[in-house]
Image 1: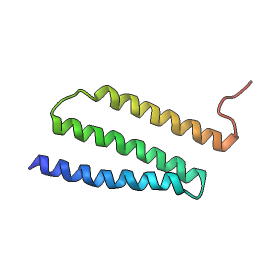
Image 2: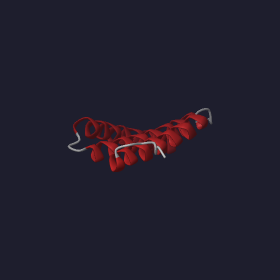
Image 3: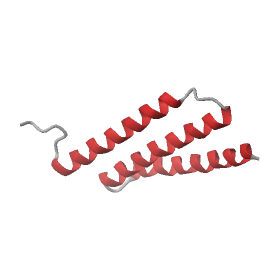
Length: 91
């Protein structure tokens, strides 16, 4: 029963990731694209987590951590770039 639920969730998350990808491509503004990329990253983390549950292993746990860190840093950097026009402060 759990496998059926997890498979259904994988299908729903795949549709959500596709919608986020489309929003990233045709987003009317840069802010929409940043939010779509962040949502895509979070969906990818959940997707990999569910695959780990289906396979009954912890083989991808490091991948999840790295993706979470990269998604956070990317969102912060892009938001800072949109706000100030520069990512790094030069004294």
